[in-house]
Each structure stands twice: as C-alpha cells, then as structure tokens.
Length: 211
Image (cartoon, rainbow, N blue to C red; front, top):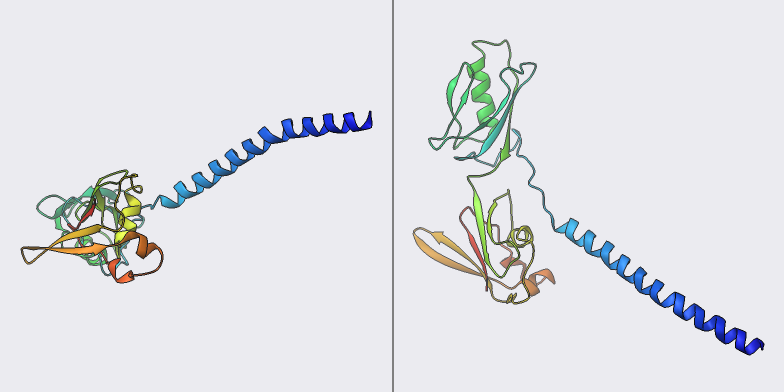
C-alpha cells in the first residue's frame, strides 16, 4: 500500500513539475530576449556645445538656449543654405561650425540686445551626416552618423541580421576622391575580438552591405 502511494505521489510530482518547469524556461527565455533587445537599442544622444569635433550640417535640428531668456530659446532647423533664423539676429550661419563656435557667434550677436548673454547650442537631431545599411538586416535604411561610430555599432542600429545573411562577407563602400573603395568586414571574427582593424570608424555617406 505504501509503495502504491509513493508511486502515485511521484507521478503527480512529475505531472505538476513538468509543465511548471517548461513555463519557467519560457519566462526565463522571454526575460533574456527582452534584455538582448534592450541592449541592441542605441539611443542617439544630443551633441552639446562643448563638443569640439562635430560640425553642424544642413538639415540638422538645433536647440538654442539663452539663459534666463526664454523668448530667445528655441529649436530650429538648419536650412539648405546652412543658416538658422533667430529673433533679433535673423539669419545666422550655422553649417560648418561646431556647436561651441555657433554658441559664441550667437552670444556675440545678442550682446547688442542682452547683457552678458549665455548661450548653449545642442544638436537635437543629426540629419546631415548619415550612413546606410542595406541587404540582409532587419531594418535597412539610413542612420545618423554619431561621433566615432563604428561598423559594428551601425549594424546594431539596423536591428541585427536575417537568417540568410552572410556574416563573413559584409563590406563597406566609401567614395574617396570620386572613386569607390571597398572595406571588408567579417562579423563573426570581429565579435570574437579578431580583426578589429576591420571595425573601422564610419564616415558620412558610407554604405554597409550585408549580402
């Protein structure tokens, strides 16, 4: 009798524990997948006026803040002619300047109207410098070229690869002095820490092809 009870209890534990364990595996997998997706999202941080490298370009969107002067603070696009329009100053050349240089130019212009103006310029949206990813990726298209952006970072922005992607045969096309130059990129090797020289810094207009 005791042996029968033990067998019955054992069968019940197997029956109850089996689906429970399977459900736990699914939950754990869902959590892992969500963490992976979260890591794959690379936000585009704004470029502030203390950035000494980035040059403002056409179609960029700028945030101009004048301390204690809300009427002069606003978000403005850089027009195709490279200028922005601000109160009192009208057209101000922006393209080709760093955010710091532009903040100094705006501050100098406002000195005729405001005592010791303090101006901060932030690039809210980078639209002038783009890189392109095409081929067997989840989200092909153009992406903002962030400072010191690498091939691996651009591929991450594209949302990963399809099942047909040839990860060893990726290449970057770049126009140099009117001629097209090809740079190879072996994804499988680079993610293992090998051939890091292939993970080049991207330039505006670069095209990453995932065959």
